[in-house]
Image (cartoon, rainbow, N blue to C red; front, side, top):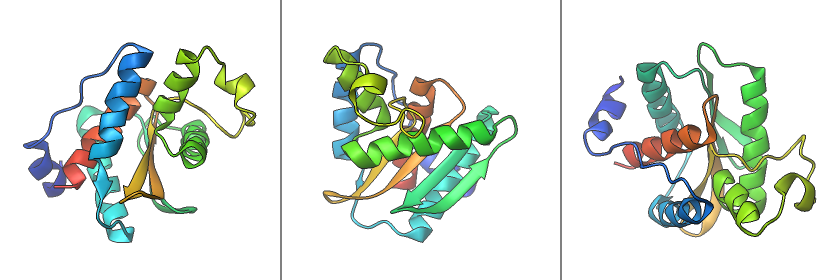
Length: 171
């Protein structure tokens, strides 16, 4: 594990994974309030991406990782076992975050809780958008400046990995 990941790992643990849509929404609402930055630039994107890589390598997770600043991929990695399909999922989830300004898992849970089908009722092309866990907004204050995303595991585990890395990277 890299020094940055090791130092932060001592201060954080993987978040508990909620199991109901109400719990998902409540947990992510807290995470989105907690995990905001005073500033976030290419150096921060690189740091966050490398923390994600270190965590995923340590656990042998077959994931793709991206940190987007605006429309630019400021960091991207594909680990052994991941594929171009994971890259596609990252972008589908990231587009959803940009539109709703919430984590992709939050959006899916909100639609389900409201008795709605995201793929049908969002009005968005399901080939380009996905409301599955693994993409999280990067806010500087109240401004959405980017998205961090992981794909390759279950949606809950993708999301938890992102949250763990954000907590480490902010240290």
